[in-house]
Each structure stands twice: as structure tokens, then as C-alpha cells.
Length: 356
Image 1 (tube, rainbow, N blue to C red):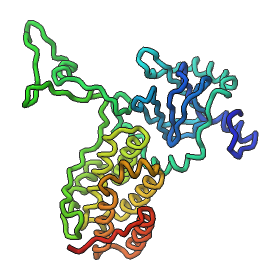
Image 2 (image 1 turned 180 degrees about the horizontal axis):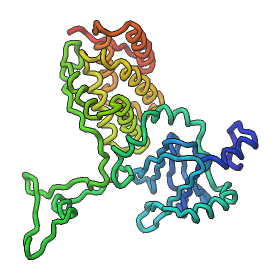
Image 3 (image 1 turned 180 degrees about the vertical axis):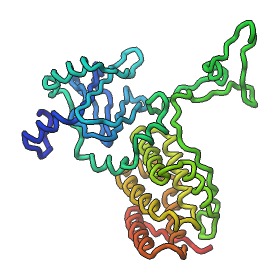
Image 4 (image 1 turned 30 degrees about the vertical axis):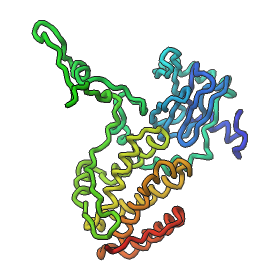
């Protein structure tokens, strides 16, 4: 198979992967467009037509044309799957192609001829991607994804009256006037188009006025309520949404993802009395957060995530709450201390929090 330089694969291994893994075909995509899959992006050349050897499971694909905001989507690939996106010159965007069985078989029979124009899935970044997404399930995607299926920071805004008219409100003899909505200053009210909204869970706003002191508010009840809202497998669903929010921020460049991710950390770091009920959740949160910070590019981390020392303050509060809790098993406290040392090494600072 072509384009496998740098991968230690025998011809038989390469042939097996080519025949059994999945493909995404980008038809008529222009040269010079940014195209990414999971943790790696590329600038397309004149002959680029997509990716091959995509392993089964969840993946995040995204594009950016002429430095415009990224547009992306999650997809669970099966084995031997073929997906196609076709470029629309007028819209400067891609269209989804629903392939018939006949069309898919036709592409499959010709796939060998396309081989040299297909980029290999970046297996050198697969571990990074798994560490960022291993709790995101199909159910997570179904629940949170925008109804349109595409994730972008360049969302469409519509007026409040247009939003209502979309639901069937029309001007006719029975309803002769059109509703008008404006804010206190008389300006039109704009909303993000409903089908483009990421449907994040509602996380109560946490007040961290005393974030620099051990004595502070205990938000255990808010965590319990959030977990209750997830219903079944609540801790796994929380972890999935925590990862989803970070991925759409880091790879999709969607700021709402960053805000949701921060809300999770604000809440989780301000829990005290019920820490002993959620030891498994916190052990997993530690590892997820560690890999998120570890895989984040240094410039991106320093310029965005570490603004106002946000991460340092929430981690200080979290480690203090664990240290001060009398009912936590010593094994868990020892694990959290090891994680704390890793974070202290990463940030080159201490996470001690003053008593008052």
C-alpha cells in the first residue's frame, strides 16, 4: 500500500488493514484545505481524496477552508466502512453523500486505484486520540450532538421571530400581524439556530469566591443532582460529556466546549462531603484530565487553558478537599498524591492551599 512510510508494517499486515479497515472519501475537495482526523490535521495537496485504514470506533473528522472556522463531526466507524463527502463550491462546504449499496460496491471495487490518493490514518496519534475519547459512547454523541450533526463555532444566528415562524407561525387572515421581539434597548433578539446547538447538560453555576482557601462552599448536592439527571450509568456519562466538551474545544475550536469543560472542573473541585461516594469517578477524572493536559499543545495550553491560572486554582482546591476528607481510603489518597506530583511537575508549582 502507498503512503505507509514510517509505519513498521509487513506487506501482509498492510494488505490486511487496507482490506478490513474503513475509508472516508473526499470528492472534489480543493487543494490547500485543512483536513483533520482525530488528533492530526493536514493541508491537502492536488491529488488528496481522503483517508484509508481508519480503525473501528469513534473518530472526529474536521475541515477548514481558507482559514475559516473548523466544521467537524463525530462518527463511529465499523469494519470495511466507506463514507463519502462531496465538496460544494458555491457554499464552500461539504455535502453528506448517502451511498447506496451499489455505489459503495462500485467504490470498493475501484478503491485500489484510489490508494495513492488516500492518506493513511495517523496511527502514531491513535493512543493520544483514545486517551481523549475513551468514555465518549454512541449514546453520548446521540444526546449531545447538534441535531444537524455538524459541530462548528461559525453557527447561524436567527431572530426570535424567525425562530418562532420556523415552528409554523405564519401571517395570514387569522394571524394578520407578525410577532416582533426586541431587547430592552429595542434591538432584535438573536438566537443560535436550534439544530446547530450543542446540547450540553445543564451544569449549575458554581461560586468559587473562596477558591484560594480551604474553607469554602461544599457543592456535593449539585454533583449529586447532575449525576441523577444522567439517570443510568451516570458517572460514565459524565466522563463522556467531560471528554466530548474538551474534544470539540481542542479539535473543533468551539468555545462553548471550553466553557462546559470549565463548568465540570469548577463543580468537581468544589465537592467535599460526598467525595467518598465517588472515588471511582474521581480516579477516572484524574487520568482523563492528566491526558487532556498532556496532549494539549504547549502554546494552546498556555494561551487559552491556563488563562488566569484557572487549572492551578481548581486543582489546588480539589487536592485540598481530598487531603482534608477523613473518610477517604488511604489507597485513594495515595493515588491522588501521585497524580498531584505529576501535575506539580507539569506546572512547575506547588498545589498547597492555605488554611485561611
